[in-house]
Length: 430
Image 1 (cartoon, rainbow, N blue to C red):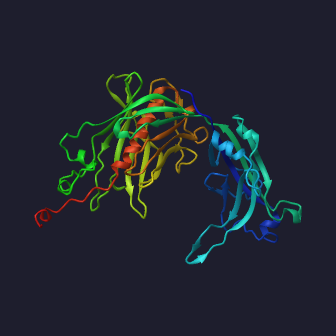
Image 2 (spheres, one colour):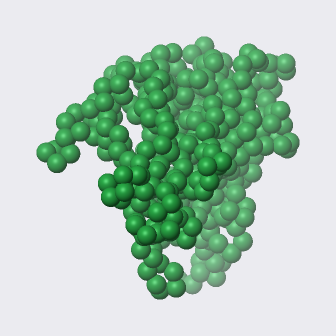
Image 3 (cartoon, rainbow, N blue to C red):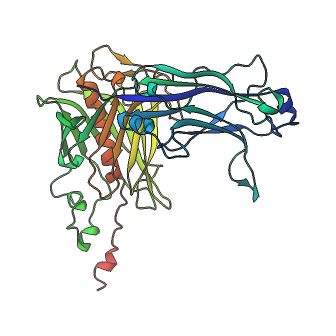
């Protein structure tokens, strides 16, 4: 398998320190101790990211050299767009970090005005496209507004900006997961078959009304006999030889919670992600667990929460790797990325086969692991999956993530609201 070129731009080791005049507020009016500092990290063509900036209050204090505040992942087309000249007022793209005190919004009806401390800019240059590790900046730099008045920086920002190659394998399901599609690897305009996907409902009888629920032929007479659960769904991933190399199946049925018609957080549905047990032919070894439920609101979302199972034990200890909200209407992206997770991973991700390889998911060496883009309800979803090359040691490693991606895609459908039962008395009321 040949990977595609990606580059990871990381911004970390943030810290802010102020000179004596600034601390007293005589020049800039900034009170370092009155409110925390935040920064907006901007790069043309990407959503603005926000991060807190720790205040360095003494000469003895140091910045966290291992902290990563923000990451951007750039593919070849992104780099080309950034290196192209822009419009007349912004001829060159740049990384821009704007530091503020205070927060947006208000409290108890009183508005809170943010105050800009300063701005750091780094122009995008040819080295961004070289595909080699490079530190673009590391250290302190003056960003305060009053540095020309006093000859000293009123505010100094510490940061580290790095570029690292982050090659990825890119795969796509060629049709809806329920239609048992082929899975191909994308390399430019070339599609290479890698896996096949087999969906089944082993524990659902052919006459079960659940089979009719997803068809367009369900009429009113069938609504009151629909089973209020979705279970028995299974997806197997086969390699080109036809051998099953990974699978995902529902272990906790998707059922409506008490008093409502949807799968709620109090009782989520769950999938078990498994791979073949090399010590016991014909048996499966647990690898991960995916839970999913529906969050109601103005725009409903599907929450997908993935745990890595330690020592392959379904009921043993686990490690939360990802908890992502996906729009029920528009779809979205499920991902495992230790730079973006609320809770950092602290233990390695074992290779599903007995190769003895381990892909570390520590906050330092982890970063991006995988992403899966899916469509919303009622749309033809063809999941697009990206895998970091450093976390894939063999074809079977990629297969386990295909099973996880299939489970995420099917969870969008499994979390659709259930149709209300018709009251018995209403059948004969007409």
